[in-house]
Length: 278
Ligand code: SF4
Ligand code: SF4
Image 1 (cartoon, helix red, strand yellow):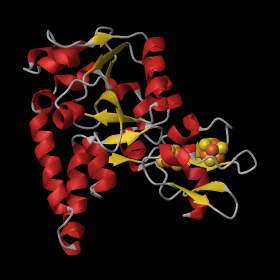
Image 2: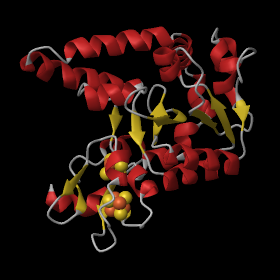
Image 3: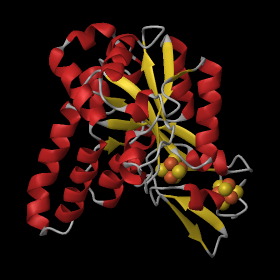
């Protein structure tokens, strides 16, 4: 189990604990303000990632000091963890409301509405979280000139997630002042600020899944489709063996490679089961 499971899940997967989605957590005024500020200002996100890009060029000793500080700050406020589709399904099993909304990262980056973010709530109609969203001035989230918030059934949401996975997007669950969880996103390295910050600039705000991918070399035909799909650079190719190799130290456990493999040669395993090789 990861540090978040110990801190927010009493040793179990923290994002599978219903209490972390509770409406009660939204009575905290600081949390409400954080959510409203975060969702109202996509331009601030873009500015922050711009600063990280500059910091990425800073001398190593500056980065060594700043990285844990910045990462620690995010772990208290807004951090994400990668999770595979089976755990997304487990979450959809116990939440009572799922809404699809425009992604704030794509809004900040591309200036267009891209519907890759899903709000999850214990209240059937999205409860307090949706009320906060509706109160803020963010027309790309609420309409009327855009699709606004769409309420989905569990099956509709799962089908969309399967489609996003086929598109190569990795699922991640997000806090809005930890441990409150407000949504699940579908990320890629070019448009998702958190993934860029984590993978491209080395300032972690999005953390590895509780899983790691494993290859069955007997089934692998060396087509390299999985290698093209992996956004974390965890898959290499052995010219000699004509098969791919998965590096568990780089793998984030998203399962996107598994979805891209027509030979069923990749499976996900509990990360702790391979701890011996680290
Ligand atoms: S997609 Fe499957 S068959 Fe193709 S290289 Fe990857 S693991 Fe092997
Ligand atoms: S190897 Fe597979 S599971 Fe691991 S990060 Fe890459 S795509 Fe995700």
